Amino acid sequence: MAINVPQERALRIDAVAQQHGALGPHAPELVHGCRALAALAGEVLGAEVHEVPLGADGSPSVGGIGNRAALVRDRTAQLAAMEHPGWPVLTVGGDCGVEHVPLGVARHRHGEGLGTVWFDAHADLNTAESSPSGAFHGMVLRSAFGEGDPEFAASPALATGRAVLVGTRCFDPAERAAVEAGLVRHVPVPAEPEVIVAAVRASGADALYVHLDLDVLDPGEFDGLYYREPGGLSIDQLVAGLRALGEVEVVGAGITECTATGSERLRVLVPVLEAVGDLLR
Ligand SMILES: [Mn+2]
Image (cartoon, rainbow, N blue to C red; front, top):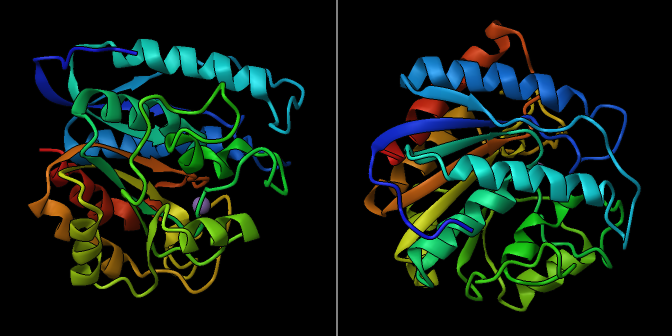
């Protein structure tokens, strides 16, 4: 992993059109959704968009992880992109598996005080053993804690408790157990800003990587999603939650799981993109 923090400060967008962390017939939609969302983010934030070159081919499931070799290949390309001198970086997925690299790099560069706020309908806390699907995007946060398949287990890892799930409403049994064991904190819908900030303070994090899976939103607000889970946040609630994090240092961010390509559908996300951009500047 890269060791030095680049000196040239200018927000950059890495478009990572990865679908290998998702399994199923609609996964290719993540590729097109990534490019459309990254283009809009570049326009709204006045930032350079760099598409990380990924191979298209998948690979067999190995050790309970679908596309395992393809994911290792995608990671190599993402790591190479992180050596670029511009920072901070907004990563636009693709599936949530794209967070593996920028979250790991943030932890490595910032140190053990790094925490994450994880806006997501899902906990992403499965391991290869516990995952019902074998899709890596449901394992990526667990990997950041140094657990699961050693190929993806982060080192250095996030400290126990130094992650805050926000708006999460779908848990597999092993994920529920991880929350109950204190691996992560959980702020359910409606996720009032002061409750999010209190959870971040309690976590002991002194800097944050902010993850935003758009499926934290209610599908009635935005439906260009790989998973549509009812009972989510409104755009206004999400923006308020993001803006509340402005009092904490944010060293990186990612937005994932968009499948929409039409500019009219994507336009409702402009306030969300502005809020994420402000956190990074
Ligand atoms: Mn999700």
